Length: 485
Image (cartoon, rainbow, N blue to C red):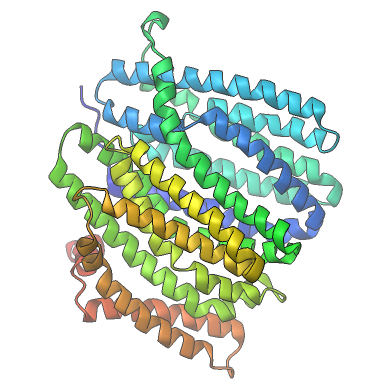
């Protein structure tokens, strides 16, 4: 029996909404929490969570991506998807229990932060019970997003209500951990509708370990070098402010990432896993090219837009003392295009086609490049050097991805998708910078004017240069609906 096919467009909207909410949340709470808890409190929370996150990573292995792919490819067979669910979930329980034993040993051995580690144990339990991969595989994004969004809003409200002074740091850590656990538990009540009982003797758990490790390698490789950047900046420069500049630049770029590619890849990637199982290769080609067009449309706009407004945006948003972040954003912005491209191919070709092992090699190559360049550049250029190292490392991965993805994406097809968007973005950048230099206007008003003019100019230029994908996108999503009304 075939399951009813979910709407990719609706799933994309749900996913985009949640990604934006996830990124906006720290921006709502950060100004308040940084004042209430102080730099020391925020530092303790950040450090203890970073330690705990490695345990969660090993507990989950690669089940979030692997589990979603396996369920997507077998979603029309209730017995198969049920068997896969129980096998993968039991495997996660086993790995989580092993990690919990080691984690308990760390708590016992810890001379400081013991109480924080005890509370953070809830995060490991949340990892063990996290079955969002199952519902992603079934493309039930509405179910996941609505519940997680409600819990996230409760989280924000609880912080403002209960975290009032520096001594409330442990309570703050507890609120974050409890809401993470609630998020994992919240979807279990919907499980009986989609699965059936499977006899224990029919389950084969061990073979999933090998497969999920292939998915885990890129996760650990990526995590190591994203954390390593900050570690090496601190160790080499001995200047905490350099890490502060780097972290603030990353916040802006991460928010843009969620708008540019995170949502579309999580939704379309699941659908393409299903299409690979059905051997519908023409449709896969079409969907990947369409996704790449969307990513480059958003990416070019965000890249040139961020560079254009950076000079005025940083003092308005972060306050005084963050001037170095402006140049960091200039260096970092192209990463939206570079990672957007590699993430699209990773989510929509390498993972759905079962070539995760191949992609893992390219990510490890990028990690090695990142490490070597960090050691060379950070001593001379501090956080700027780390940003350049990240750009070159990500570019290495993207080049390898495009070269080895057969004919599902080529340089010529990529350039055809990118050329007119790049031209329009470059012109928009020049105009936005000129507007930003009008000193007679209040800086906040000037920033608002830059954003409005930038968006308008970029869209009008895409129409003038006749970007076929953009014109079709606007017509299919907006104009055709207006005509119907």
